[in-house]
Image 1 (cartoon, helix red, strand yellow):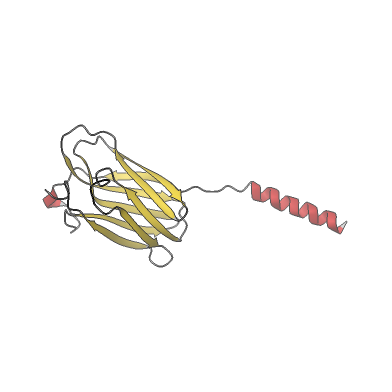
Image 2 (image 1 turned 120 degrees about the vertical axis):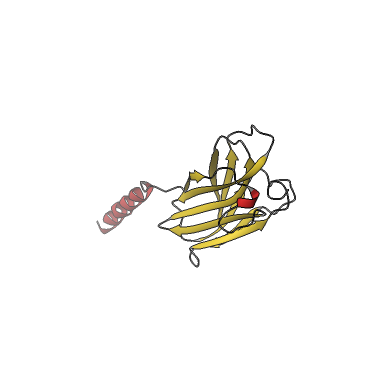
Length: 161
């Protein structure tokens, strides 16, 4: 009888565990700036700097991408998130590229259901790939520092003319 009770208890625990919802991190684009003049990059950050400012609270990672390079006529933006092990891969895209020019924008987005852990954060930008520029890739140890600012110097258009 004792063994039967143990088996039933184990079975109940397994079934309860199987019904547990596993949360998947998500991302939402909260805001974007208008096209910024290289002379008016704002926030005291020079126009040749491509920066990520982040803060973490309540399993939400809020990110401001300062001086992101896009087409002058993007007709809006979209972001997506992929989680590969300990790496958060954020892909930024413009909805269209209708003009023959580029400029800098600020994008604000929020990642949800993020554990307070150490993460590698990679931001995939359309106008940095293949340009010989450093990709945005850095470690954010959210257990140690819940906020930070990481910048990468850019030497190509639209960050520099």
